[in-house]
Length: 191
Image: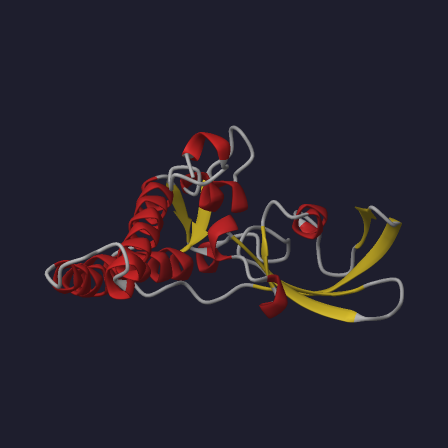
C-alpha cells in the first residue's frame, strides 16, 4: 500500500519522544546530581562502545545472507540500531547541557534544596521519603523525584519542622517536614 494512504512513522518522529518525555521548562537548566551524570555517561559509553558495535555486526552479517525483505535478524537489527542511535543522540544532548550539582556540598543543610532527601508526613499521617534529583534521573517509584515536580517545588526552601501546602488536582494537602538530609560530598572523579 502506498505510504500516502497510511500513517506510518518514518523514524524521525520517534526522535522527539525522549525529549518530550523529560522536557525541561523553558529557561531552566538541566540540573543533575554527580551520580546521575555518571550513570547517564556510563549508559552512553556502553551504547557506543558495546551495544552499537554488536548490533552493527549482526546487521552486517544478516545483510550478507541475501534477501533482506524477510530477514528477521536484519529487520530487527536495523530497528534496534535506530533505537540505539536515538538514545545516543538524546544522551549526548542531555549531557552537553547538564548542570552537575553535588548536593553534598550544600552549605544550607537545614533547608530543602536540590539533592536533599526529605522525610515528610501528609495530612493522613502517611510518611514519605523522597530525594530531589534531576529530570533525567527521576524514578518516582524509588523515591527519586524531579526537581520540577509539584511535590519537589512545594518542598524547596522548607526547613525541618515546617508545614507546607501542596496544591494537587484533588485539592490542598498539608505536608509536615520531618527530616532533611544531604549525602556526603561525591568523591572527586570526572563529573
